[in-house]
Image 1 (tube, rainbow, N blue to C red):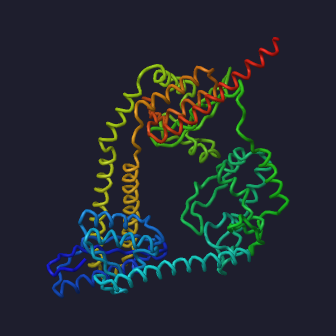
Image 2 (image 1 turned 30 degrees about the horizontal axis):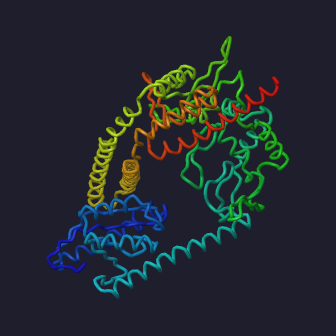
Image 3 (image 1 turned 120 degrees about the vertical axis):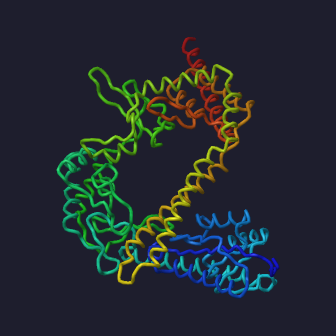
Length: 546
């Protein structure tokens, strides 16, 4: 990596901060790091060095303990394709706090002819001594990270043992106290919590209690104090269950250690008495039941594991409604059903929001019977190979990239506007808009990386011979006497995903080589078990007749 005077450096400026607080400060560490790096490039240009900034890569609010950072991955890709031949950081720990990761990146940079420059640790990496010092500092950065983590963990443990609040979501009914580590009771919210406990004991079930609470105007604060997570604003089964099982309401701090969960008396005031809490716990325990056994009065819902809405991608769950003469089974959106469980009037965004179970299962089973009775294995595998070769993710990746370029243009325009803004005019709205654009850009970059990973991880289909062997096992399993359990196993073995659209039903068969081999082994075991049971039954029957 000997530097040549004629080399034109395409510089990548990498910036990182660890916490969200640092990331949200528009005049904080991110801007300071970038400005220091830009000043260094300008100085190099003034000294006659041929240098240009090829890009600025920012990972806001992310740790350097690993390489799972969107901007870092984009930077490495730019180095790989030759768009960058000099990586600059303000200090080594900004790039990595893992010796193993840094050594891997360092070897990668050398293999691509890419220089590395840290402003704080100014090494001559063209010498053996300089490279040794660089790796030593990487070790110190990792040591510092681990030591800091140990100190924080020890501090959290001691604080938890003392019953202090350690951060995170503040339970509904409490507010952050001016005294660190304590919570104050919010009188209005605390009254809603007490009423929620009484409503559950009176109504008997979570869903009926939610309906009563929502119908009588009791609501939850959407913005959770202590974090950015948002509630739905109304009561549903999940939120009510969390409130009814949270020991913080009886003044107990629950914390996790290496040996498991532990409890300590909390420093904040209890909202619910222990007698009521125990009574609610016992009622919840009685209401809870395991999966009901198969019976003539209960529809089996054999597609539950693999059926999804083709419009929104949400998983569908089996439900039933009482008609005049019989029950009507159907599949509907599981997550949306939970969220809206406490509302009298439901809001459905997908059409259809309910799919008749008997009709859907009949269509799927007919398709599977055609597969088992015909010679469609080669056709399916050829179809999957064709789709794989078409690079199905490329158009979506390109679309997301275009949106990213648009955000970059908007950010540049705001930056220019910020520079021209009179001193007496507040810049807060501009910073707020830039922050929104930054979050949107980060989400787009993460989506692009995810699509690329999915593209790379798309499994190679199995061969026709193995798949036919797999189908033979399922044919024998079907012939051994079809039951609901066997029918469900055959469907889930063959099908990876079923998508329901307003005008059609799509069946996606799983043909990945590892999946087929795994399912082949499971189906073989199930078939052998079925044959043994049949043999035992016949033998037992013959003995009785004798």
